[in-house]
Image (cartoon, rainbow, N blue to C red; front, top):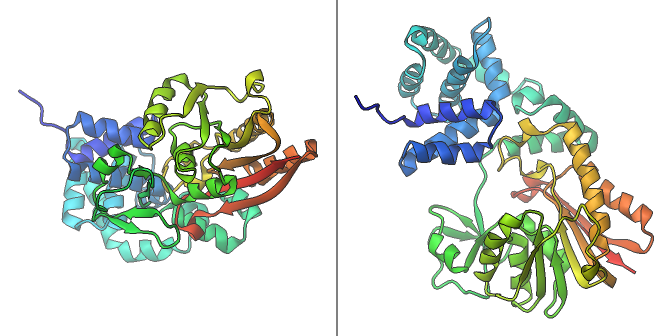
Amino acid sequence: MKNNPPTSRQTALTCLMRWHEGRSFAETLVDRECSRAALSTADRHLVQALVFGVLRNQTWLDHVIDSLRKGRLDLEMRLILQLGLCQLFLLGMADHAAVYETVNLAPARLRGLVNAILRNALRREKAILEEREKLPLPVLYSTPAWLVQRWTQQMEPQTVRALLHWNNTTPRLYVRANPLVPVNGMPASLAPLDRAPGWFSVDGALPLEEIKAGSLYVADPSTRYAIDLLAPRPGEEILDACAAPGGKSAAIIAATGGKARLTATDLHEHRLPTLKENLDRQGSSSVRTAQADWSLPCPPEWERRFDAVLLDVPCSNTGVIQRRVDVRWRLTPEEIRRLAALQKTILENASHAVKPGGRLVYSTCSIDAEEDGLVVRDFLQNHPEWTLKEEKLILPHEEKSDGAYAALLICA
């Protein structure tokens, strides 16, 4: 007898089980398992809402579960209850459908228990939701206590609360128009951003034809700050040192009318064909791509060669927790320290590629001081020939976009 294909909720449970094994990122799991189950677009959206909703709120969901059921639960049972509570309290689904579908996820011998716990949660809904706002921030916003404490040391309390709240909301998708490949009729799904001319919020289907043609590029508006600081000019020799998949290189191409002599490098050689393909679509086929490991000394042929260097270094992604839902659970203080040490090395090595009188923009998608201002100041302390011209920290809840940091350094 042929087995029935998995439902959207069964697929969401599979994704969460695989995620707890620690082998894949949430986005990867959702794409893979939805494809395996051959789910419709609507069901894929439901799977993503369920998986991301649970991961964004798992500490609070566990708190609710523990208040309803004393005693140890195995992982699968806990995830089933998290999915049920997510549907009831976070996604606003109909009570009867949420309970029925969740109960059916459980083994037959445990369905009565799942039904009883979820029915009890509904009876106590008002008290559960009233209590929620009084809980400590790490529980309320399901963020590791060490990270909340770290941000509290770096920011004002009201800023931390607003940031945590923002991180648990659903991100928007944005595209940037490419002036070198004009759009032939702007898609109806795009709404212009007043704060960022040339950028659009996607309100509906992603305009795939225009993206494939190179007229639009999927990117977050926060990326524009690093390009604005770099201020690339036509004819300049420019290096994008950590370029893949190519969003900032594409912005450099657009800003120079396709006339920058751009070299785009990446650590991983297998990413270069896709990088080149992405950049060719942007209207400039003269971009050079190359493999480069900037944790190693600058190649001799690139010493003092470039007018401008964009250095978008590997980072903790603390500025994009809203978009990358499982970053908060993968990150540790030790990892931030490791990344900061790597960033210092990369900055040191890439700085040797800048001509005297040239400029370098150091950027991250982190909002953590150890990876941002402290890295830059450590570099300046050891290099008096460099000066800090300008820096900008973009907090996501203030910008209503991804968080980021960018600093413009000038070489004497």
